[in-house]
Image (cartoon, helix red, strand yellow):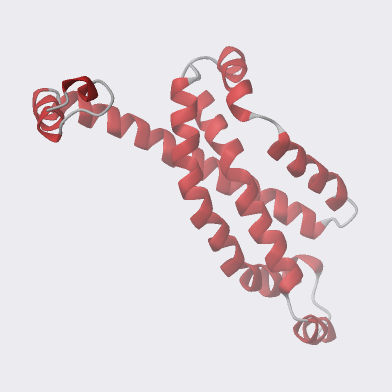
Length: 173
C-alpha cells in the first residue's frame, strides 16, 4: 500500500528471504560478534574484580582507583574506539578492550557497593578472630560482596553487546 516505507522498515517476508539467502554469512557474523562480546565481558570482569581486590587490600590506593573509574565513565568510548583500533591494531583484541571499558564500571561498582554493605557486626565478629587481611577479604568480604558484583555483571552483559557493536562500527574490529 505504501511502497515508500519499504526503505525505512522492510517487510518481514523480505527479511526472511534475505536471511534464508545469506544464512551462513549471518551465522558467521553472529559468532564473530559473540566472541567479541564474551572476550570483552571476560576482560571486564577480570579487570574490575582485580581492581576491586586491590582497592580492598590497599585502602590508601582506593581514592585514586575511584577517580580512575569515574574518569573511565566520563570518557566517550565511541570517540576513542577508532584511536584504540589504531594503537592496538584492527583485530579482536582492540574490540575486546573497547567492550571491557564499557563493561568495567558496573562490575567494579557492584564489588564496591558489596564491600560497603557488609554489616558492621559481621565485620567485628570476623575481626575478633584476628584474620590476616587477605583471609578477611577472601573469606568474609568477597562472599558478602558477590551478590552485588553479580548484579553488576548482569548489567554489564547488556553493555557488552553495546560495546561490541560500537567496536565493530567504529573500525576497532
